[in-house]
Image (cartoon, rainbow over all chains, first blue to last red; front, side, top):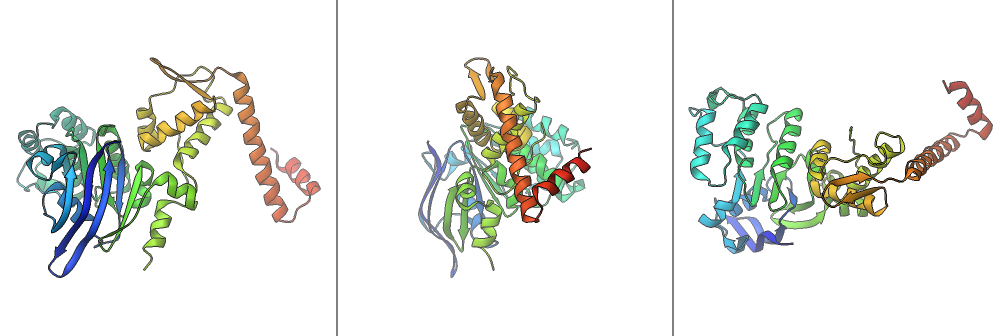
Length: 232
Length: 119
């Protein structure tokens, strides 16, 4: 299978602190991969480098055949930890914004999903709750026909019912020609939608395996294994 | 269909067991057409690759068959449902007997309990 993301010896430092230490990994097209690790392990740093927001201090990263830059941004759809729209914007304006920015954005898909969520296009972002803002952002990100989706904590601020909606939205909108990376610590919620999981700890990759392998080899869930590996 | 998953075994195996149970109990009948992999995956909220794997395995076991253009069906073999039902019955009985033995009951005790509480 083709790789949609490859990192070779990727390193990132913030001053004295090493956030990513020589990470090498590859993500296959058609797979949903969970990027799992405790707070401060380097998950967000890795996603931000792949999306082109941060640059690495060493090593190489490729999305498809492209180096990270203008070309890679055309095929990568990135959901940040926090929604970034100004409070004064209307929901409909955020849709226009995305349409302007991304050729692969489908307005129809976005409008249909917002309707299902009962979110009015005329609502101003400022009037929406934190959870609803996150949903709007996810709808926009998943309405692109991207090759790689980078979702940083897609369920951080929403209630359990909305989590189910978010998982369904992710499943519905992705296809076998795309890859998805989901960073999260809500493992038990996402476990059943994942093909593979990557554990990272202090900027090192400690494991990259399929969920099936973990369950059949260890006889326990990824959630249980995570608690073991990262026990404090 | 109502899907439930536990934490002990691979999800695809649990999907297989649940589809087998549906065939055994007649919820799925011989010749019934199954929804697409994608639809089933979304319904069960599992990864489409996982659903695909479960269905392929069931096909390999002969319980499902796919026709190239029209989709996937429950196999037309009337013995399947009976065999599956018997398999599941055996599992239930084995677990029951093991548990009752652990609790220290005899066969006669068990028979007495079953008669008493059957209804």
